[in-house]
Amino acid sequence: MNPKAISKQTLLRLPSYLSYLKSLPKDECEYVSATTIATALGLNDVQVRKDLACVSKKGRPKLGYVAEELIRDIESFLGYDALNDAIIVGAGRLGGALLSYEGFKEYGLNIVAAFDADESKVGTEICGKKIFPLSKMKELCQRMKVRIGIITVPAHSAQKACDMLVDSGIYAIWNFAPVHLKVPDNILVQQENMAASLAVLSAHLAEAIKNNEIGKGDEENDK
Amino acid sequence: MNPKAISKQTLLRLPSYLSYLKSLPKDECEYVSATTIATALGLNDVQVRKDLACVSKKGRPKLGYVAEELIRDIESFLGYDALNDAIIVGAGRLGGALLSYEGFKEYGLNIVAAFDADESKVGTEICGKKIFPLSKMKELCQRMKVRIGIITVPAHSAQKACDMLVDSGIYAIWNFAPVHLKVPDNILVQQENMAASLAVLSAHLAEAIKNNEIGKGDEENDK
DNA sequence: AAAATATCGATAAAAAATTACCGATATTAA
DNA sequence: TTAATATCGGTAATTTTTTATCGATATTTT
Image (cartoon, rainbow over all chains, first blue to last red; front, side, top):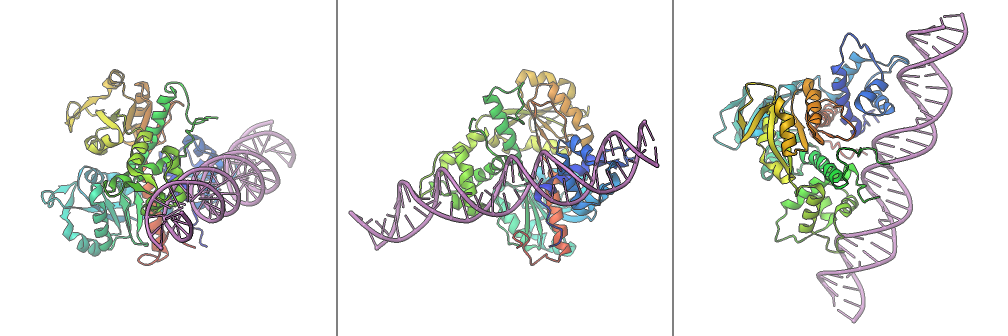
């Protein structure tokens, strides 16, 4: 109905376009063509054109798209221009790393606080962000109208953290624990699966070794 | 030709199966059916069955698969049983978090050292792993036959880090910097794209807000 | 001013991934 | 011993995603 029928694959590629576009020298490249982007990113040019058509205006034949406009349109489509407040559950190593990562602001994500079950962490700060006890979660979320929760607790307590977030009125969850979370239908879960990435790497490597391809072959195109 | 024609999607799902299988109480569940796994993970049962067929033996009608066998077979397929040494380039927040994460051993990944351009970090340790200057990379990689490099430097120096890794004889690169790396054909790059995950989350959230769906709708099945 | 060219957008074809269907089989229950 | 049932594995149909092709258009060059 609405033109929201954007494929997940496209959605996943948009950030790449964005980072590529941002890496261009502003003054030199007013226009960028789909072909250029595709070549730089190792993609198909038609694919890039189709992706861009979903989120931005028409390009101009012979020239391409206005780079700055593309950046604006992608950012706006992804909601990066509207800062979303988020909280983190689990202030361990990973949680701490995310807490202290300034770059999320660029993606419209603003982490306002962290929660942890560990008494000894409660009350301390990481990069100016306070760590609260789990018992304060609901109150803080509702008071600050926080909509995004990030889970960085160990696998065995992830579902509990998730339930608490849902109870606190969170709408979207970014889950770093290697667990499939059970949530009500109206809650969005985005799984950050580092194990999956690692699996791809590991499997390819294992195969390359098996086939003695290492150091010569190319395992991408194998026909 | 060889039965290696496993799809990338399947590969990405295997770790989920693994973590689910491992979460089962060992004594109670000798057998697991594809249907059970599918339901638990919110997938289609045929899909699960097809995925499993790629990496394990046949299941038994009416019962399903032997859980322990499945675990073993998936782990072995993914190469988790053979420990791979890896190094990290970039000992900042994220690099530190990865360095100190013990869980990678389960995935067959053993991070042996880190490298950083920052003189003040060189010589220090994180979780018993030493931080070396970039100049030592090649020597160490070759001496220890390290095959995997992990990039956790800022975007603007990622390509340089990548080139150094390639020069050091690395075969596979796990890249956390939001940049498309240029590498020779025989080098495998696995992009860890947190921005992409975030994009999915952010876009869905933005849309839900726009459509006033929050708190009632379900945006998964929408027809 | 006209010709050459690079790129666009749309449609069509191809490839890949997901899902549906169905007969076969082994276990459990009657 | 027989019937009922849950699940498997394979084939087929569907859906989604990617890629190829082609006419149109605006810019640059001649």
